[in-house]
Image (cartoon, rainbow, N blue to C red; front, side):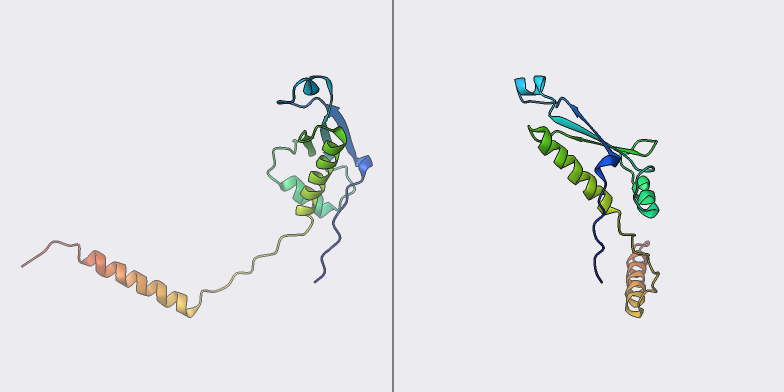
Length: 136
């Protein structure tokens, strides 16, 4: 079975804005907009419909009520590296739902597992029967 080609998101479907990063970093943090906000509108994208549905079904706090995925990248000191990081995280998220989940097929318990279950039940029954009041 061959693996499908990973899905790619077109750059024109993504809005990127530079913002100031949070946290430590000295004066660099205060004067340079090195962090990146990436916004990806899932319903308006060119992704296949089934992939859109699975993306929107994710219980992810980064997806808004309107179906816009918002990623913030501020790991690196340079804006270009943060942009690459945001895009790689977007592609990783999209490709994590690209393949449909396997459907579960119900199976019957084996004969051996039934026997082990019944044996365990009878052992517990004997143990509990011995807990009664002692009579002469």
